[in-house]
Amino acid sequence: MRILVTGGAGYIGSVVTEELLNDGHQVVVYDNLVKGHRAAVVPGAQFVHADLADGESLRNTLKQEKVEAVIHMAAYSLVGESSVNPAKYYQNNVVTGLVLLDAMLDSGVKKLVFSSTAATYGEPRQQPIDESAPTSPTNPYGETKLAFERALNWYDSAHGFRFASLRYFNAAGATIKCGEDHDPESHLIPIALQVARGTRESVEIFGDDYPTPDGTCVRDYIHVVDLARAHILALGELGEGSQIFNLGCGGDGYSVRQVIDTVQEVTGKNILTRIGARRAGDPSTLIASSEKIKAKLGWQPKYQDLRLIVESAWKWTLAHPDGYGE
Ligand code: UDP
Image 1 (cartoon, rainbow, N blue to C red):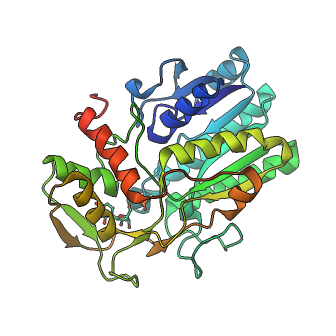
Image 2 (cartoon, rainbow, N blue to C red):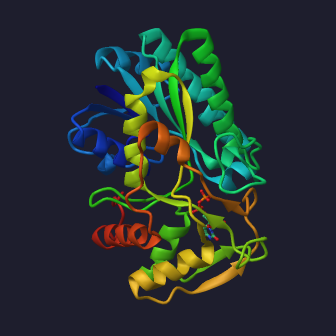
């Protein structure tokens, strides 16, 4: 298939591109490089350096490249930032997303896989969370992703638009070539790895008074390759109708302290921590039930052990001490 990957120069987008190319698909990466990196565009993919808000450029790309389906990953994705700057999130994750949908309709492309998030659920009453859990985001990031999912539903009923919305839990890990490089870095595992490398003094733990076994937040970490494989499975089944799928490894999840302990074990370095305030918008626990995608699409995570996830991220960090070097 000929697939447009928005945000394909980003962390997850680059790995999705790698996997699509491995499977013989043709990929056009569409990215404005505000968050992404030119060096993260996988060789073999075509690259269009443009903004999603530019409807004309999108329409030209979709038509000229004879795109058959879109994987829409370009978005802002920081819980804390969204809580202090909601407008930025509404503008990019909702308004600009609609420019993409309308350009797709104009070009006759009606298949889309969307990067959604566990943050759509907010602070659920039951764990693990399945897709029937009520959605009640506790931050604008989750709220804007949910708003876009709802728009997709209406585009489906009005225009026969077929989508799969993948609600990611915590993506982590790396491949040999593609890894996590944000500026500034805000994610737990890369931050702990910076401490291991000596480029950061300590990890600030955002709250240790949550109602969890050790008081720190519990999350469900999923290897980025397992996540990428799910996109390809979802693409293949779009003809069957629109769907929402959770994506995590399940189990008991890992607390912030457990993640830091694992980073210490994998790297052999002492990771200094200090306790800080809670981060705005953070639910205490988010653990996925991924039974639906397992049953419907035959998806299975290969890297369920957090150690394997951290090891892959550590290898990438050691091989790319300056990230993508930009
Ligand atoms: N976290 C933390 N210190 C940090 C970064 C993250 O304690 O410097 C916590 C954060 O509060 C959350 C978990 O680690 O409970 C994972 O956060 P991350 O930003 O990696 O992913 P998110 O859950 O926001 O998608």
